[in-house]
Image (cartoon, rainbow, N blue to C red; front, top):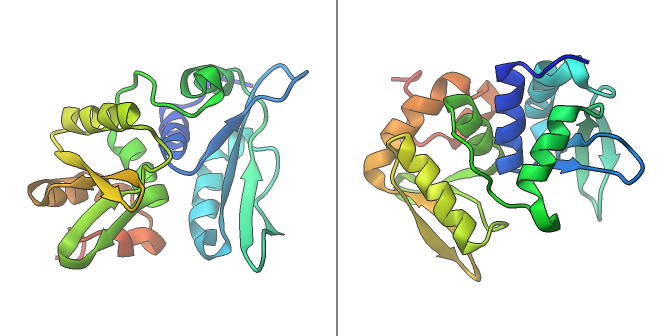
Length: 193
């Protein structure tokens, strides 16, 4: 299996910043990526599959989750580059933020996974899974793209909130990559204006 293309790598890293999980199973040489979303996000999973199809282990499938939740997911094949990303993102067994440089596609995928908008055009990245140190790394990564975000306490945990002056720029950066079924997350859609 060849190297990941830049587009594949960007989608994988954006997914790892969001809801994705790279697993390394004992006794296997390399790690694989699991893409798992609610069935309501079927179009999004299908889009990720279309990008990652060259090293996918099979087509996306519906599965029953806990309670009434219906999920839609697929796995990639094992891949050495996924093993490298596993080492970077899961050092010590817990998901963390390694030294990376964001590109617009990574940010768009991360936003489609974990982005949300609230009243008055407030825009968040639901980063509650990361500790405060990693949240600061994420703020710095966004700053490298000219975006200003702060930590915002959501009940017990922190998430990232974009300052209002950065929201339009965020939307301009990611809009070309946001698939139609996820455009509702944008607080300002340059395509519509």
